[in-house]
Length: 221
Image (cartoon, rainbow, N blue to C red; front, side, top):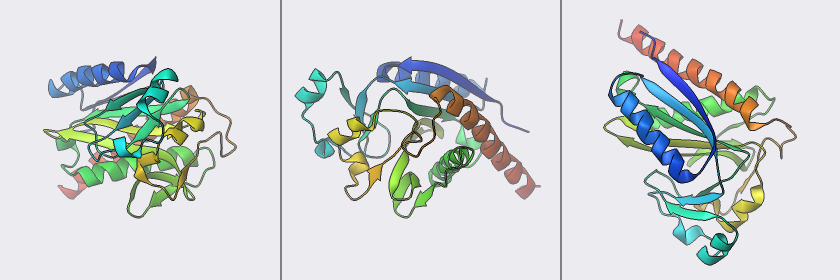
């Protein structure tokens, strides 16, 4: 049976609103109304730290961030420190992994695949980098991933740089990785807005995760 996936576009919201939307989506998944809900949105300027830490990777002071109108929030997602701002496509898949695979590494790999296939639609050759989570164009990270999983239902997700101001990343050591930089579709010469990328990504998401269910069905006869 194919999973019932819902895609919701929430527009530009605060990080706090994003958490609330995830909570509402989790309720829909836990009730069995949907197998998964993909929230696609943009965030107001915010820097978040994950369970892997990140406050130590702040370059700017909290006071400087505050005066610039940038929030700093410690999150329960995986990963280290990252930035969100308008022009970046943020995806929060809230999914019951029991219907796919109870394997967090597998899930992260599938999210990377969604992003790689989305970027391929725009002529960008993107891929994985050994030892580092996320999606890369050469030695520059174009998409960060940080997830949470509780009772096999996922939260948080990924952030794809589309046409956002990358100057904000100078306030941190992105993901705690000093030797590599960040990039975006715009920086790679692709002029496209977030809404268009969101439409392409939602299609790729549905394809990747539907194929995963079909493959599991074949395996289990």
